[in-house]
Image 1 (cartoon, rainbow, N blue to C red):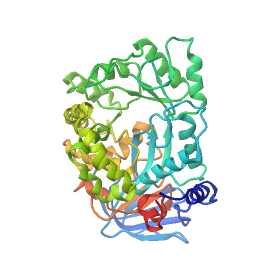
Image 2 (image 1 turned 135 degrees about the vertical axis):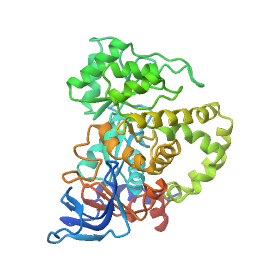
Image 3 (image 1 turned 60 degrees about the vertical axis):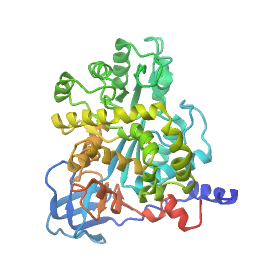
Length: 456
């Protein structure tokens, strides 16, 4: 374990550096030449292309050479592949406490834990996340530091705490009657959430007990109230009935796919018309049985690079043994293929519906989500769209991020192999650019880099 003095110095460095060390001082322009561009739209890749970045945005994408602005950094992209930065639309960032109110002070240790988790995302090529439920002061504090350039981080969108029925799924913003409880929503809005997350799940399935739900008329009122404030909505559901009721109540996105059963033909036809963005969140359910049956997955380089050796050992031994006996792990092992097939059916009728979300807290989990999406029968090329363009659409940010187009923010990942041939090639990262700045992956606060300096 790192001595207290070492921890104090590390905390000081994170909080006090005027220019975060993992973001290089990028030149005014970056040119990537001769690269194959996978632009996130799902069409054919553009070979031998030149991409020009000036400031924070992409200014041109096209075949052949382009003029070189004065002082530009030129990157040789020959034999390489450029895709948009990956996006995770369902994160619960490590470091927040179980108290999800917007008023609880955070500690330096919480911030350190959060920053380290954020760095695992950048290390894995993830340039944007949406935190779908956390301690408000924790996640909003990190969000504001990231926006001000005080920490190196993927772009953070967040809801803070969630809105739910008393005794329902989530909290701490419990709503029972309208307009009597409007002040509770105003308390949530005071934290300036980017979206509202609503918990709407009766449980009573798998191994979970029954819990309460919001009545449909109150659910619609809550969604309309947030819309009147310019705030998008997402909702936790697990079955088709709740998904349909939420959609007709006006919800903007679904935080999970239907997982309790195969979706009906009527549901698929409704989604063919409605095209409501749906987060994939396969990794969270599959993680339990994967740990029970195949703990050796933790030996893969991306996990070793971003997880402490002691944590890996604990998971492979104590937690793996516990998951072998866990009823929830056994249930989710059965239900994850159902969710995979439901997502495949949605993707078949609308290539903009499914969006990449993990319900986890690391960049390695995003790549597992891509593997599970492809494992469920969706093509690697579509999986890239799901984790870029569709995820940006889920967030309502497609005008700025999600694809490689002139005018978009320059969130880019340069790979040494083609991810549309093998989705595992999305891990073969040579360079990450976020908003026009090259991220120095060797200086991110992840385990592989701390190991090199003797840290723990």
